[in-house]
Length: 431
Image 1 (cartoon, helix red, strand yellow):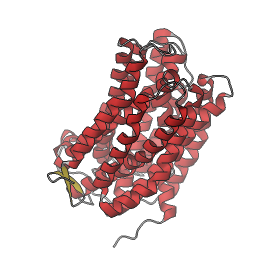
Image 2 (image 1 turned 120 degrees about the horizontal axis):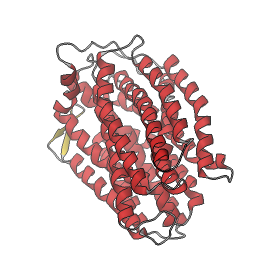
Image 3 (image 1 turned 180 degrees about the vertical axis):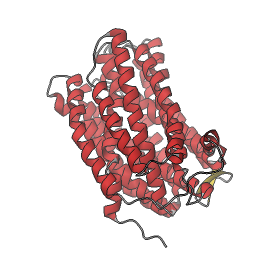
Image 4 (image 1 turned 90 degrees about the vertical axis):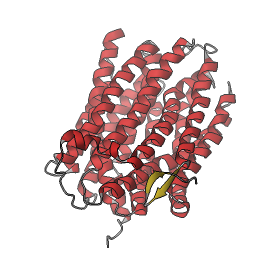
């Protein structure tokens, strides 16, 4: 019988989640506003760059996952992570130290993002696969996931607050530039803690008997995975659209750009505070039912944002707090359900988690690519101009508040039409 992981082991594993989340937030939230608003690139050009690079990034993830599964380096997942971390650091510094103007600036953004995304993918795919391999029973997997995502939320909180603090009145671009440099030592220390002290995964068998392409397609041949992935895709797009548009909404609808950092802090602080509650609820009523509850809470809170206008800062703080509480369900329960699906289909001794998390990462980045590549050009077409209050703000409010709620409800309905059997998602009974 496997001894449950100690709190110290969980914290050591979760440590790397903090800087990885710190890197993700400014790239996904601040880059559209920085390059499209502050640096003056056209929204359509920014959207095209983000769509192209994110699609490239998404396509590479399943390949990297299978590569890590089939060609384990000496040191296993740890060495793949160690290879990815320096690339992430270099790319992130490049993104927030822009060079050039016009198409040259767009090229700099694209090149820096390619390096950052490659490093991030190498690190996160193997990091998440390592976590899936650590848990041997469903609740233990939820503990591993909650430890990682709880520390990730702390990282997100830091990423939400630090850039504005570091700007010291010198502007958003300067704050992000300083943030990228402060990020480097945090990344080094957290990586060392995880790589040095996190427990190794149990021994896994090497994949034999089929080729690279078959291994790449194995997750998609798993029906429970396909169902779970469809839910994740809809729910992820619902989250990615507000993440892309939040700074525009705060600036041009609420007219409170100076509070942007505070809004983000409240949102992610509520997510961290709610994580233990979703963990306890999932143990009581099951992961699927708890995840549906988190989606419905998010919709009930976030639909209110459509009615807001200039000066409604207090109301938006409440929305951020309530939707932040719901966030914990997405972060803790979806990856834990994925780990259950992998274990049921592949068994505990099969080294296939990298392939699954590679496809999972592809879906996550596809969400972000579609949000940026469709929402930003669409808003430009509808007449929205950043910084010009009243120019297309109705379209911005619809895109920011109502569209995500509709997608979340669709995701919840799809999940409700599935049943859990042996920890995996299967089509069938209602909740």
